[in-house]
Image (cartoon, one colour):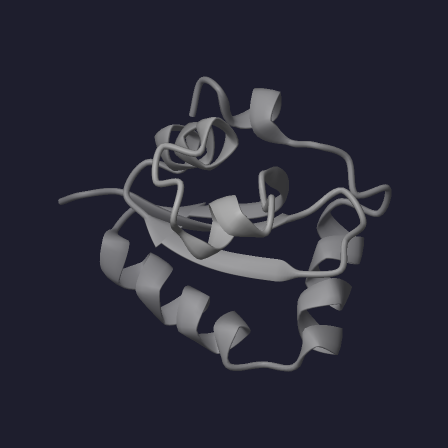
Length: 98
């Protein structure tokens, strides 16, 4: 079974939040940071600061949890970030070896 995860990235001012689902959180965040897809929403809005992530044993588990957070309010997303990462530090190096 394929592992899965999701992440929340933001810009330097924390004005926009983007939630993404992926099988490889580290590689996906690297793509955001390098703007591999320059026309994407994350590239256009400079969303490259990883502030939250969750990993799961299966992609199906990740999808379920991702959808719950994605359909919630901005307040709910910010509460999740504040509990996980109260200083909104960049977490890219933390997941390097996941």
